[in-house]
Image (cartoon, rainbow, N blue to C red; front, side, top):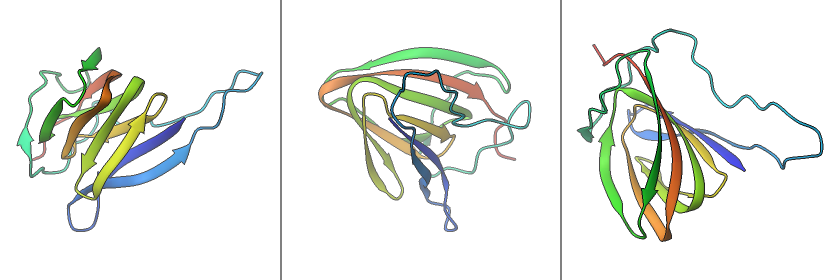
Length: 139
């Protein structure tokens, strides 16, 4: 399992800020902190260049969904007023950011903090668990 945390670089381009191996599940239970917010609701996302996708999640509110992507399905570059906690449950998907394409497989997770991103499902499609946390729009 691995984790990607996204953000923007010094030139305002969406990118991976951190990538970590979460390790294998052992015999003993283990709690692994992946990401947390310190403000309620979370602060504003950076300004985006892609199209804005309004997911209808108000600041501080949440939505938990499962997304099933048929093989090869894609969704173009966009940004949202949410922090997204995504886990690939099955299959594979490509996450495209300003710094390039990041392949994700079952077990991988990513935090997308309202930044520009796009998706393309792999050859067998993908299923993802997605939790959305509404953040405030940029000022």
